[in-house]
Image (cartoon, rainbow, N blue to C red; front, side, top):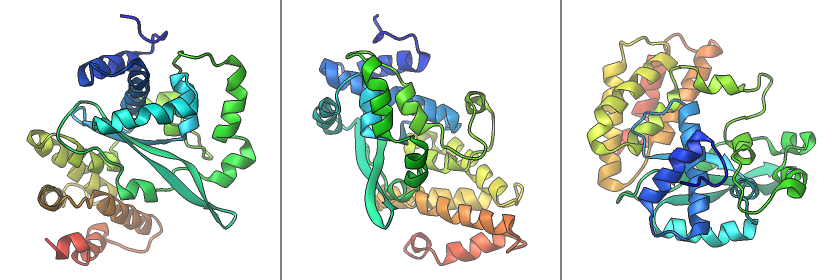
Length: 287
């Protein structure tokens, strides 16, 4: 099987997934889907998502995705509706404020690994998230426009190279940049909360157990509150199944704020603070 001119393992797995999920896809949309799935697999590995997760969300400019696919950005926009119509990919522009003006700094992608009745979408919390600092990227010459200028003379049509997307989806600039090896380190990841609605219903129990353990660890409460957070997560699942409302992002944000309060010495009991805020939350009062 020819694999788009690359021996990258994630691309190989993604190519096989693409063939199973949409055998009738034309060549162009299939190439795009393969790259998006491959990047989703790497993001899932970096964030230590559950092996049973069925979709992944990540950030990358459309121009960088087109470079990885080996096509013009206009071709990407022409192929994308085919994937969205098949319920395989969702994409939304991400906006930020730069110099007092609203600017689009990239795109948030949600890619599904296999076909199912569940509608793939980009949740509102992912669109609110601050993925990058546009001002810092412009100052450092890290924009998608600059990336395209640098790669254009050496980029050939129909070649696949994940590095263009990987720079955005995995490596966020900071004082201590992420190294390649850090993607394989084991850690309790609070983002396992987002695994819960993304796994099949029959696999929720194990995923909720791990997510509740991550929450307890994040608020420095050991395992004493794990059962309580398992009940909270099960309740959010019931709300989502019954009404379609997704409050997992809101819960994640609340926990991050409590964790920051703990780190800054504003509370002695992370569980007590989070419990008091949960009682005021819309998804608790409406359930």
